[in-house]
Image 1 (cartoon, rainbow, N blue to C red):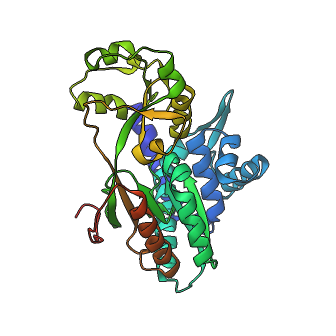
Image 2: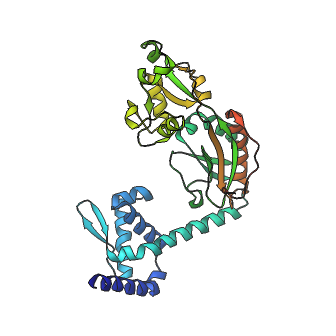
Length: 329
Protein backbone atom coordinates (compact mmCIF):
# COMPACT_ATOMS: atom_id res chain seq x y z
CA UNK A 1 0.00 0.00 0.00
CA UNK A 2 2.83 2.41 0.85
CA UNK A 3 4.44 1.84 -2.54
CA UNK A 4 1.14 2.50 -4.29
CA UNK A 5 0.75 5.78 -2.37
CA UNK A 6 4.28 6.82 -3.38
CA UNK A 7 3.52 6.12 -7.03
CA UNK A 8 0.22 8.02 -6.74
CA UNK A 9 2.05 11.03 -5.31
CA UNK A 10 4.54 10.95 -8.19
CA UNK A 11 1.74 10.77 -10.76
CA UNK A 12 -0.08 13.70 -9.13
CA UNK A 13 3.16 15.68 -9.12
CA UNK A 14 3.72 14.75 -12.76
CA UNK A 15 0.22 16.02 -13.68
CA UNK A 16 0.82 19.29 -11.87
CA UNK A 17 4.17 19.69 -13.56
CA UNK A 18 2.71 19.04 -16.98
CA UNK A 19 0.10 21.78 -16.40
CA UNK A 20 2.63 24.19 -14.91
CA UNK A 21 3.46 27.19 -17.07
CA UNK A 22 7.13 26.62 -16.20
CA UNK A 23 7.10 23.42 -18.24
CA UNK A 24 5.83 25.34 -21.25
CA UNK A 25 8.73 27.74 -20.84
CA UNK A 26 11.37 24.99 -20.63
CA UNK A 27 14.18 25.37 -23.12
CA UNK A 28 14.60 22.20 -25.21
CA UNK A 29 18.33 22.27 -24.35
CA UNK A 30 17.42 21.65 -20.71
CA UNK A 31 15.30 18.62 -21.57
CA UNK A 32 18.03 17.38 -23.90
CA UNK A 33 20.58 17.49 -21.07
CA UNK A 34 18.10 15.85 -18.69
CA UNK A 35 17.70 12.91 -21.08
CA UNK A 36 21.44 12.63 -21.66
CA UNK A 37 22.23 12.46 -17.94
CA UNK A 38 19.44 9.93 -17.37
CA UNK A 39 20.73 7.73 -20.20
CA UNK A 40 24.48 7.97 -19.48
CA UNK A 41 24.28 8.12 -15.68
CA UNK A 42 26.74 10.98 -15.30
CA UNK A 43 27.38 14.62 -16.19
CA UNK A 44 30.60 13.73 -17.99
CA UNK A 45 28.91 11.04 -20.08
CA UNK A 46 26.09 13.42 -20.98
CA UNK A 47 28.61 16.11 -21.94
CA UNK A 48 30.41 13.71 -24.28
CA UNK A 49 27.20 12.58 -25.94
CA UNK A 50 25.98 16.15 -26.42
CA UNK A 51 29.32 17.64 -27.42
CA UNK A 52 29.27 20.32 -24.72
CA UNK A 53 31.16 20.86 -21.46
CA UNK A 54 30.36 19.12 -18.18
CA UNK A 55 29.78 22.43 -16.30
CA UNK A 56 27.25 23.43 -18.97
CA UNK A 57 25.31 20.18 -18.46
CA UNK A 58 25.40 20.73 -14.69
CA UNK A 59 24.03 24.26 -15.04
CA UNK A 60 21.25 23.10 -17.34
CA UNK A 61 20.17 20.37 -14.92
CA UNK A 62 20.19 22.88 -12.04
CA UNK A 63 18.16 25.35 -14.12
CA UNK A 64 15.58 22.72 -14.99
CA UNK A 65 15.27 21.66 -11.35
CA UNK A 66 14.79 25.28 -10.30
CA UNK A 67 12.14 25.96 -12.94
CA UNK A 68 10.19 22.81 -12.05
CA UNK A 69 10.78 22.99 -8.32
CA UNK A 70 11.88 19.36 -8.11
CA UNK A 71 15.04 17.29 -7.64
CA UNK A 72 15.88 15.27 -10.72
CA UNK A 73 19.11 13.50 -9.79
CA UNK A 74 20.97 12.36 -6.72
CA UNK A 75 24.77 12.35 -6.74
CA UNK A 76 26.28 8.92 -6.19
CA UNK A 77 29.88 7.70 -5.98
CA UNK A 78 29.71 6.53 -9.58
CA UNK A 79 27.55 9.19 -11.17
CA UNK A 80 24.03 10.57 -11.09
CA UNK A 81 20.97 8.51 -10.16
CA UNK A 82 17.53 9.70 -11.34
CA UNK A 83 14.97 10.35 -8.62
CA UNK A 84 11.46 8.90 -8.73
CA UNK A 85 10.30 12.26 -10.07
CA UNK A 86 12.84 12.10 -12.90
CA UNK A 87 11.76 8.56 -13.78
CA UNK A 88 8.14 9.73 -13.93
CA UNK A 89 9.10 12.58 -16.28
CA UNK A 90 11.26 10.48 -18.63
CA UNK A 91 8.41 9.27 -20.92
CA UNK A 92 7.25 12.84 -21.56
CA UNK A 93 10.83 14.00 -22.19
CA UNK A 94 11.42 11.12 -24.60
CA UNK A 95 8.20 12.02 -26.40
CA UNK A 96 9.47 15.60 -26.74
CA UNK A 97 12.70 14.30 -28.27
CA UNK A 98 10.86 12.02 -30.69
CA UNK A 99 8.60 14.91 -31.68
CA UNK A 100 11.58 17.21 -32.26
CA UNK A 101 13.24 14.58 -34.45
CA UNK A 102 10.05 14.03 -36.44
CA UNK A 103 9.71 17.80 -36.92
CA UNK A 104 13.32 18.06 -38.11
CA UNK A 105 12.87 15.13 -40.48
CA UNK A 106 9.68 16.54 -41.98
CA UNK A 107 11.24 20.00 -42.41
CA UNK A 108 14.33 18.52 -44.07
CA UNK A 109 12.12 16.69 -46.54
CA UNK A 110 10.57 19.99 -47.66
CA UNK A 111 13.89 21.65 -48.43
CA UNK A 112 14.47 22.50 -52.10
CA UNK A 113 18.18 23.28 -51.73
CA UNK A 114 20.49 21.70 -54.28
CA UNK A 115 23.46 21.67 -51.91
CA UNK A 116 24.00 21.01 -48.25
CA UNK A 117 25.34 18.11 -46.21
CA UNK A 118 24.40 14.47 -46.66
CA UNK A 119 25.29 12.01 -43.90
CA UNK A 120 26.00 8.42 -44.94
CA UNK A 121 26.44 5.42 -42.69
CA UNK A 122 27.97 2.10 -43.72
CA UNK A 123 29.78 -0.82 -42.16
CA UNK A 124 33.38 -0.24 -41.14
CA UNK A 125 34.65 -2.61 -43.83
CA UNK A 126 32.57 -1.05 -46.60
CA UNK A 127 33.56 2.45 -45.44
CA UNK A 128 37.23 1.49 -45.65
CA UNK A 129 37.36 -0.66 -48.78
CA UNK A 130 34.41 0.31 -51.00
CA UNK A 131 33.06 3.81 -50.44
CA UNK A 132 36.14 6.14 -50.64
CA UNK A 133 36.50 6.11 -54.46
CA UNK A 134 32.73 6.42 -54.89
CA UNK A 135 32.60 9.44 -52.59
CA UNK A 136 35.69 11.00 -54.20
CA UNK A 137 34.01 10.80 -57.61
CA UNK A 138 30.84 12.30 -56.15
CA UNK A 139 32.79 15.20 -54.66
CA UNK A 140 34.25 15.95 -58.09
CA UNK A 141 30.85 15.75 -59.79
CA UNK A 142 28.82 17.57 -57.10
CA UNK A 143 31.12 19.92 -55.14
CA UNK A 144 28.09 21.76 -53.71
CA UNK A 145 27.29 18.72 -51.53
CA UNK A 146 29.28 18.12 -48.35
CA UNK A 147 29.58 14.50 -47.28
CA UNK A 148 29.73 12.95 -43.82
CA UNK A 149 30.63 9.26 -43.60
CA UNK A 150 29.81 7.34 -40.40
CA UNK A 151 31.64 3.98 -40.36
CA UNK A 152 29.68 1.83 -37.95
CA UNK A 153 28.63 -1.77 -37.48
CA UNK A 154 25.69 -0.68 -35.35
CA UNK A 155 22.31 0.17 -36.83
CA UNK A 156 21.86 3.94 -36.97
CA UNK A 157 18.21 5.02 -36.91
CA UNK A 158 17.47 6.79 -40.18
CA UNK A 159 14.17 8.15 -38.86
CA UNK A 160 16.05 9.94 -36.05
CA UNK A 161 18.36 11.66 -38.59
CA UNK A 162 21.38 9.75 -37.33
CA UNK A 163 22.10 9.37 -41.05
CA UNK A 164 20.40 10.42 -44.29
CA UNK A 165 21.39 7.34 -46.32
CA UNK A 166 22.52 3.93 -45.09
CA UNK A 167 24.51 1.32 -46.97
CA UNK A 168 23.35 -1.92 -45.37
CA UNK A 169 24.68 -5.46 -45.77
CA UNK A 170 21.21 -6.83 -45.09
CA UNK A 171 17.67 -5.92 -46.12
CA UNK A 172 16.32 -3.08 -43.95
CA UNK A 173 12.90 -3.77 -42.45
CA UNK A 174 12.12 -0.38 -40.91
CA UNK A 175 8.83 1.17 -41.96
CA UNK A 176 8.77 4.56 -43.73
CA UNK A 177 12.20 3.84 -45.21
CA UNK A 178 12.80 3.54 -48.95
CA UNK A 179 15.17 0.72 -49.94
CA UNK A 180 16.96 -0.53 -53.02
CA UNK A 181 18.77 -3.83 -53.41
CA UNK A 182 22.01 -3.05 -55.24
CA UNK A 183 23.30 -6.59 -55.53
CA UNK A 184 25.26 -9.29 -53.76
CA UNK A 185 28.92 -9.54 -52.76
CA UNK A 186 30.66 -12.90 -52.74
CA UNK A 187 32.39 -13.96 -49.53
CA UNK A 188 35.49 -16.15 -49.65
CA UNK A 189 38.00 -17.75 -47.30
CA UNK A 190 41.56 -16.38 -47.13
CA UNK A 191 44.82 -16.94 -45.31
CA UNK A 192 48.12 -15.06 -45.26
CA UNK A 193 50.90 -16.48 -47.41
CA UNK A 194 53.17 -16.58 -44.39
CA UNK A 195 50.59 -18.50 -42.37
CA UNK A 196 50.23 -21.17 -45.08
CA UNK A 197 54.01 -21.45 -45.57
CA UNK A 198 54.41 -22.60 -41.96
CA UNK A 199 51.82 -25.36 -42.28
CA UNK A 200 51.79 -28.48 -44.43
CA UNK A 201 48.92 -28.85 -46.85
CA UNK A 202 46.03 -30.60 -45.13
CA UNK A 203 43.24 -32.76 -46.50
CA UNK A 204 39.76 -31.25 -46.76
CA UNK A 205 38.41 -33.74 -44.22
CA UNK A 206 40.92 -32.62 -41.57
CA UNK A 207 41.01 -28.97 -42.50
CA UNK A 208 39.09 -27.72 -39.45
CA UNK A 209 41.31 -29.69 -37.05
CA UNK A 210 44.66 -28.66 -38.53
CA UNK A 211 44.13 -24.91 -38.97
CA UNK A 212 43.39 -21.89 -36.81
CA UNK A 213 40.56 -19.52 -37.63
CA UNK A 214 40.00 -15.83 -36.95
CA UNK A 215 36.48 -15.13 -35.71
CA UNK A 216 34.38 -12.36 -34.26
CA UNK A 217 34.23 -11.66 -30.53
CA UNK A 218 30.65 -10.85 -29.48
CA UNK A 219 29.23 -10.86 -33.01
CA UNK A 220 27.91 -14.36 -33.81
CA UNK A 221 27.57 -13.99 -37.60
CA UNK A 222 30.50 -16.30 -38.41
CA UNK A 223 29.35 -18.92 -35.90
CA UNK A 224 25.87 -18.86 -37.45
CA UNK A 225 27.46 -19.12 -40.90
CA UNK A 226 29.37 -22.26 -39.91
CA UNK A 227 26.23 -23.79 -38.41
CA UNK A 228 24.25 -23.01 -41.57
CA UNK A 229 26.87 -25.08 -43.41
CA UNK A 230 26.30 -27.95 -40.98
CA UNK A 231 29.51 -27.31 -38.99
CA UNK A 232 28.94 -26.96 -35.26
CA UNK A 233 31.40 -24.51 -33.70
CA UNK A 234 31.32 -22.12 -30.77
CA UNK A 235 33.21 -18.98 -29.81
CA UNK A 236 36.15 -20.94 -28.37
CA UNK A 237 36.78 -22.54 -31.78
CA UNK A 238 38.34 -19.28 -32.93
CA UNK A 239 41.80 -18.74 -31.42
CA UNK A 240 41.79 -15.05 -32.41
CA UNK A 241 38.64 -12.92 -32.13
CA UNK A 242 37.81 -9.33 -33.07
CA UNK A 243 34.52 -7.56 -33.90
CA UNK A 244 36.09 -4.56 -35.69
CA UNK A 245 35.95 -5.75 -39.28
CA UNK A 246 38.89 -3.81 -40.69
CA UNK A 247 41.09 -4.90 -37.77
CA UNK A 248 39.74 -8.43 -38.24
CA UNK A 249 41.02 -8.39 -41.83
CA UNK A 250 44.42 -7.11 -40.72
CA UNK A 251 44.66 -10.02 -38.28
CA UNK A 252 44.05 -12.42 -41.16
CA UNK A 253 46.63 -10.63 -43.32
CA UNK A 254 49.18 -10.81 -40.49
CA UNK A 255 48.85 -14.59 -40.24
CA UNK A 256 46.69 -15.14 -37.16
CA UNK A 257 44.68 -17.73 -39.00
CA UNK A 258 42.13 -18.34 -41.74
CA UNK A 259 39.40 -15.75 -42.10
CA UNK A 260 36.58 -14.51 -44.29
CA UNK A 261 36.30 -11.38 -46.40
CA UNK A 262 34.60 -9.93 -49.43
CA UNK A 263 36.01 -11.95 -52.30
CA UNK A 264 36.90 -8.99 -54.50
CA UNK A 265 38.82 -7.24 -51.71
CA UNK A 266 40.72 -10.38 -50.76
CA UNK A 267 41.63 -11.27 -54.34
CA UNK A 268 43.19 -7.86 -54.84
CA UNK A 269 45.41 -8.25 -51.76
CA UNK A 270 48.86 -9.75 -52.53
CA UNK A 271 49.40 -10.70 -48.86
CA UNK A 272 46.74 -13.41 -48.82
CA UNK A 273 45.70 -16.50 -50.74
CA UNK A 274 42.12 -17.54 -51.44
CA UNK A 275 41.37 -21.05 -50.21
CA UNK A 276 39.44 -23.29 -52.57
CA UNK A 277 37.29 -25.41 -50.30
CA UNK A 278 33.98 -27.17 -51.03
CA UNK A 279 32.07 -24.84 -48.69
CA UNK A 280 29.24 -22.76 -50.10
CA UNK A 281 29.50 -19.43 -48.28
CA UNK A 282 26.35 -17.27 -48.56
CA UNK A 283 26.75 -13.97 -50.38
CA UNK A 284 26.40 -10.61 -48.66
CA UNK A 285 23.42 -8.50 -49.76
CA UNK A 286 23.98 -4.79 -50.36
CA UNK A 287 21.09 -2.36 -49.87
CA UNK A 288 20.59 1.38 -49.88
CA UNK A 289 18.09 2.87 -47.44
CA UNK A 290 16.80 6.38 -46.72
CA UNK A 291 13.76 7.90 -44.97
CA UNK A 292 10.92 8.16 -47.46
CA UNK A 293 10.35 11.85 -46.62
CA UNK A 294 13.96 12.64 -47.56
CA UNK A 295 14.54 10.33 -50.51
CA UNK A 296 13.53 12.86 -53.20
CA UNK A 297 15.25 15.85 -51.61
CA UNK A 298 17.74 17.14 -54.20
CA UNK A 299 21.11 16.54 -52.48
CA UNK A 300 20.04 13.20 -51.03
CA UNK A 301 18.68 12.04 -54.37
CA UNK A 302 22.00 13.03 -55.99
CA UNK A 303 24.05 11.09 -53.43
CA UNK A 304 21.64 8.13 -53.59
CA UNK A 305 22.07 7.85 -57.37
CA UNK A 306 25.87 8.14 -57.10
CA UNK A 307 26.00 5.44 -54.43
CA UNK A 308 23.72 3.16 -56.44
CA UNK A 309 25.91 3.54 -59.52
CA UNK A 310 29.18 3.12 -57.68
CA UNK A 311 28.05 0.18 -55.55
CA UNK A 312 26.63 -1.60 -58.60
CA UNK A 313 30.18 -1.66 -59.98
CA UNK A 314 31.58 -2.93 -56.68
CA UNK A 315 29.22 -5.87 -56.18
CA UNK A 316 29.69 -9.27 -57.80
CA UNK A 317 26.05 -9.80 -58.78
CA UNK A 318 24.14 -6.55 -59.38
CA UNK A 319 20.36 -6.48 -59.38
CA UNK A 320 17.80 -4.15 -60.91
CA UNK A 321 15.04 -4.18 -58.29
CA UNK A 322 12.99 -1.01 -58.10
CA UNK A 323 12.86 1.24 -55.05
CA UNK A 324 10.14 0.27 -52.58
CA UNK A 325 8.01 2.68 -50.63
CA UNK A 326 8.50 0.65 -47.46
CA UNK A 327 11.31 -1.66 -46.51
CA UNK A 328 8.90 -4.33 -45.40
CA UNK A 329 6.92 -4.21 -48.64
